Image 1 (cartoon, rainbow, N blue to C red):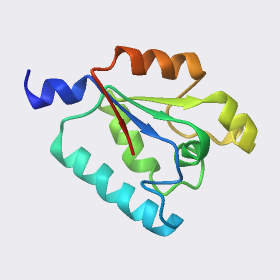
Image 2 (cartoon, rainbow, N blue to C red):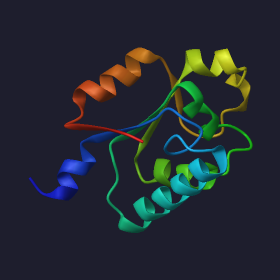
Image 3 (tube, rainbow, N blue to C red):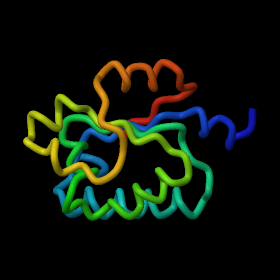
Length: 118
């Protein structure tokens, strides 16, 4: 199996404001670099799942909306936890992706050959 095929069967989990567990500015900087490299590379995961604080990345005001929109246009499924959106009061602010439930996230994970947590 080639690396491209392997990665296209992968799911990425985003559960924080950005990438890693540093302060928010560094988390956003790291995620910005990661998403830009992902777009440049042209090899995409099957899905990116957003839950807990990760849902803040797909709503109005997120600095990553353009990159995430481009990934979605290129066939990456962006799955957002509806329970988390409700918890944070962000349900009406979603700008990219598909609002789903934990069952949708679980389904994406179980179908994936690899699950990557950022």
